[in-house]
Each structure stands twice: as C-alpha cells, then as structure tokens.
Length: 316
Image (tube, rainbow, N blue to C red):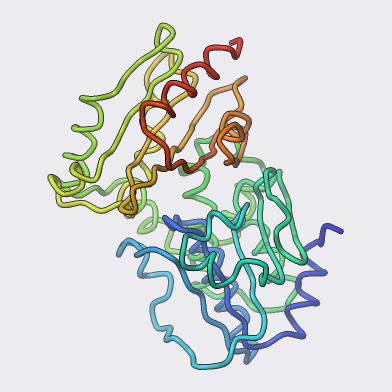
C-alpha cells in the first residue's frame, strides 16, 4: 500500500530515535527534505539525525545551521528522495540494506525497497511531499524549515525551469517565501555562484564532449584527473549534469563521471519525447522522465557503445 502524507505523519508521530538517510552525491532535494523533516521532528521533542554516504558541498551548510548530532540508539530508519538502495552509496547500503522502515520519494522508478513507502511520482521534488507530511504533523514551519523545503524544490526544478515544475510547486514555494525562506540567498548560492575550479572543470568537460546522430545525443566525461587538475571534487559538480542537454538540437545529454572506487556514474537528461528513466533502466538505474541516472563498473567504452546504440534506436 502506498502511504499518503497523513499516514506518514501518523507513523512518525509514534516513532522516536529516528535516522534519516540521504542519497550519495547529495543534492538540494535529498538534503533539504531530510533536514526539514529532522527539524520538524526535533521540534516535537524527538531524537533525530540524518546521515549521508559522501561528503556534502559546503554551500548546503546553512540547512543545518544551529543543529548538532544527537546521541541515541537508532530505532527507526527513514529514506528520503531515494529510489533504490543502490543510491545509498556503498557504506550506507552495507549498513542499512533491508532495514529501512519508511521511504518518502517522488521517483516513479522507486523499487519499493522499504517496508513502507510514500511515493508521489508527480511531485517535482521529495521536498513537496515532506511539506505535506510536516503540515500533517501539526508542526509550525519556521524560516529554517521553509528554507530547507524551498532548497529541495528549487534545486530539483532547476529554479523552476524544468518540465517537472507544476502549479503546486509554485504554490508551495510561495508559501515557503511567506514563511521566511531566504529565497534570494538560496537562489544566488545554488544557481548564480561557481568557483573558478568549477568553471575550469566545465571547460575541460566541454572540450571533450562528443556528439552523435546530428547532435541528437551529447556525451561528456569527467575523469578523476580532471578533479585533481581543477582542485574540485565529485560533490561539487552535480549541476554539470544538465549542461550537455543545453546544446541546441540535443535531445539526450549524458554526463559520465569517474568515481574514486573505479566505478562510473552516468547522469542522463532528456527533452520530450525521450525518457531518461527508460534509458537508464537498461543499465539498472532509473529516475524521472527527463532526469535519471545509473552506475556501471565496466569500461567506459563498453558503456558508451551500448548507450549510443540504445539512443539511436529511439525515434524522435
């Protein structure tokens, strides 16, 4: 049974010593959703922490300003914005696989790995669902929670540019603005600010970008050496995934990133009518219609060859 926000709130109201899991390569939605829920539950007197597999970009630090890690023996495990246990990352997957009680998610490709799931595939961000859960909990949304929810919504919609943006998305964002979300600062940090190293990383990526089928498909590769050369890290370049799709004529933009453990992560972004999630499912991944991802541990050449063949067979 798919839970609704009211049912989720009823469950959480009875739980304590809660751990909230976020996905690896954490973005604004998984972090914003986790910390918004954490703040709401702590305001009810509950003990709650959130954890992540990977380092978190310093630009997100405002989300948990004033919060400290609590000491307790975990009793209830929640995952937010996670479609499959693979997205937990190696260490969290090893620790929590099969132990997650509740998942709150907006990915239609969710594998229903948790014992109970609240899945709204038409939500632009998991933060939208978390907003309604917090409302059902009866918690007053302060400026800190509002900023968390706004961060999740704005980052997963590309500052409201992506096709997943709905009237409800604008409605919730407007409420967060009225409740004190620092929208100007969040927009500046998330969408208008890059380090020199990040710009250099973009340049290297663009220099090596490959095009197929009269620009229908664009593939960019980021290697570990490029991080070292520019002084950047993996967690700093989540936004780069959307760049190949920005090229005129491109319907499928793919950014392939080499990970430290030797594996690869591919982020796929598409324009209608192509389905990014359907493409990634060929590699054991998934996501949304216009934004999805997958991991692979074979050779880069083998992956690209298969990817090019799959995209070439899709009519536009």
